[in-house]
Image (tube, rainbow, N blue to C red; front, side, top):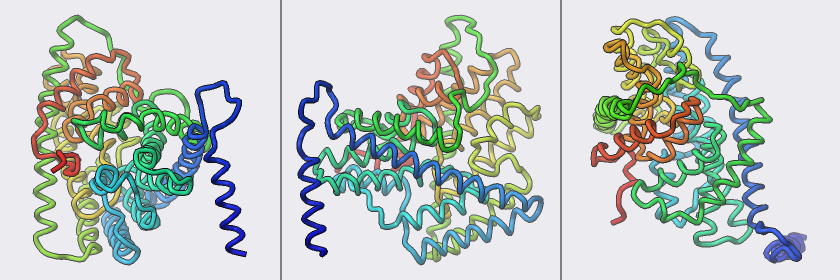
Length: 422
């Protein structure tokens, strides 16, 4: 019986290998494959988001001082899951596998990634769900590519298309998510993966539609910035100056992360002890500064709508940087892109407090762009993502700020696998 089933599967795959006959359009069977991957990715992302929202609201009931034991326990459980089921790795591993492992993302550790990241993100860690979604949907692309006997660049393109689907579902920006999945692999050689551009766009578009249907996502902007009014050519110079300040904070974040990584690796501790320590530290920060809790998907709007003093904004900036650094280095799982946008928005508000006459939305969006481009080395996709997420209609100032953060970033890369091939 097993032999007959295998023969039938081979027959079906041989049929799918044939080109679509009498097809007057550009699309082929590969288009259908990319579209199917996007549909699967949208479903996975939608179910993950529903589970995350449920768990987040459940754990949010524990307020006040209770946040400290809750985050400590969740950190310990997440570490225990990683210890017992397997280490799913971080964004470094994903980038490394795409670049040096023939584009293959292993799905065997997906259960560990899903369970540990849900606990880490829902309890209030300063990392978002984009990294888990990229790993899970990217590995689905690898599995689907192997099923249809794709090899070489075609298989790599399927994995990248899955990654793009994960980014897009989180950010609601198909073009930005597609470019981000390419740029984050290597900041100097994006064109090396040019064959994956169309697969990524197709899969992202389908993923976005399915995800939007599942969670009732609208087409509006995610973060409500004040209306920007162009005040002259000097706005471009101002965006450069704001980007300089944000790049300096990006340097601070990178070296802060290196410092905490050194501390956590100084002694060989089990992963569940590291995540427990990280949970305690994050719980203490969240108790005193509740707005620094979570990955800032909703907190950015709370920050923009609030009337905070300069002193309080400086505290938020410092401790959010610390919170992200601790979350990344103590073994907690998740993505750091949206938390970095939060840091950038906080810096923009601080600059406006110091110089009330400056253009507030320009300061905020320039700082958000520069710090993310500095850390992730993704100026093109950062520009498109922020224009989509904030509704900032003037595209060029964001690009100026992104390029400033990119070119003034430290040589020490935050994502080490982005570096040149040996």
